[in-house]
Image 1 (spheres, rainbow, N blue to C red):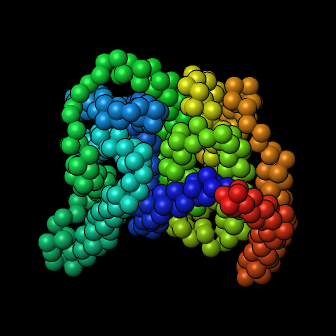
Image 2 (image 1 turned 45 degrees about the horizontal axis):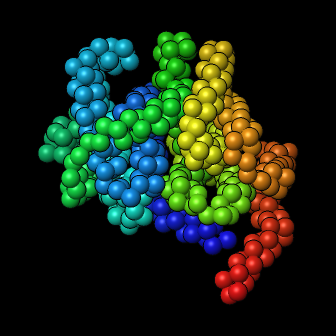
Length: 502
């Protein structure tokens, strides 16, 4: 319980540093969808960030997790940090230069021939993201949560502020100047040909500010490259590169191939709707991200404890309960949560429950996957994630032409579900943990069951009555947790306190 309490505290700290920036960042979704009423515009944004997410994995190639693994076990953490950082610095400079040289061809390949600046800015965003990866990992390893949080928050505040400046202040001034014929300085700062591209420029500027704030992490230690250590780190990291690439296929590749599998002119519109509705699952993604920031260093640090496996089992149980609660709470309030995006995008809200459950599976998989990271058998992570990617690609290629982004949502659901199950059974063989599967399935099933009950009267009552009944069902779930699980928490806490007293 003391370990669980520590993780909860770390999750809360990282949660604050993640929730606030994520919340501010997610505000860009309603901002952009309400300003750009045509889903095609938001489709450009979604598609480009899908490419950015995918290439980010190549630029960091698993080195962040390799740093965690080797630094947590080494007495000379500076040597590990220096080696990992030099590796990232050299590879980032080389890859960025290569992409910039071929940026015109990349623009043609991605159907952005008329927006070469989008490609250049995106390459620089990827480069700056990569340069910050190891310094941020070091802050997490050293549990410098406040500094981590401050830089993350500043990064997003700058990003959001610049988006507001361009799309609200400058764009409105430009639109007014068109109507009145009287221009102003702020109106001249907005170019309609760049349009949604200002979001990429704002992101780049925000990253540069964050890099300046991280300047201290690039000094104060000797830059020494340990070739033997680097070989070990690369051997550990490269399977994670495959894991990352396959994982990103599962997470974002659907937003790329939609444009190529649908009739000409439909792709970007469908991507825009799908991308906006994906963002409605905000609470689930924020919770999982906050948990991941805290959990990875925690799992590595707690490995040597005698009851580490028991702690891992307990963590997963409450993680599933928490995610099930988020799923149910979101769906019970969808009547007003959907206002997160403007009306032209709401035709896609039917995929939200599918995506929420898919992300729940992903979170469980992340918990379970710690076994191959702790045992160094990262090849199994690659194996599992590749299978997930094959499932994702197969369902998307077969069903997108007929069912559009709905097929993509189901592909994500089945992919993460299969990965979760595979990791559970392989973990039982190589790193056995006695998870309370029955208990987890009970709370998960109750949440899904209550959701299906709400569908029985959906659209048959007036909106206010439906919302009240939905939240009564949510309170029923909370009561079941209070009745059946809260006593277990109290008993475990009493045992822990008694053990400390003894």
